[in-house]
Length: 85
Image 1 (cartoon, rainbow, N blue to C red):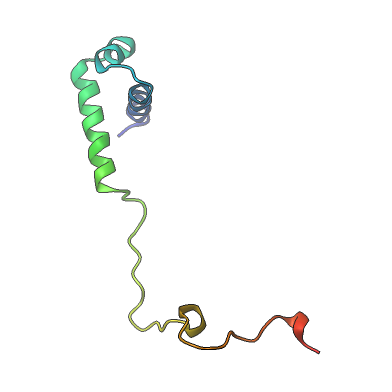
Image 2 (cartoon, rainbow, N blue to C red):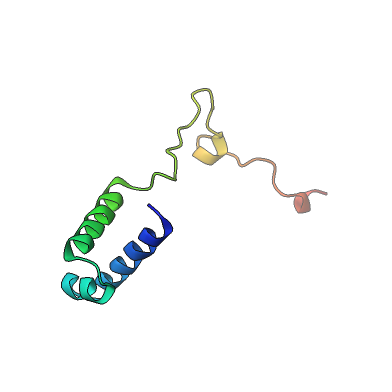
């Protein structure tokens, strides 16, 4: 999608959120009602599918959990430097 089309889509979504009707948006922006409808359908589909920019992160198979973070040890590591004498 080009920058102009993205700007149009953002404007349409903003106007819908403000309570404007699809017909009024089409008239104000001088586009067809079908254009407004297709923009809103595309945006809704993108929202349902989630973000494609954010990758799904998987924990490496050979990585072991840190015991004091998972609560499986009775003691905390080391302590701070200010507690030493």
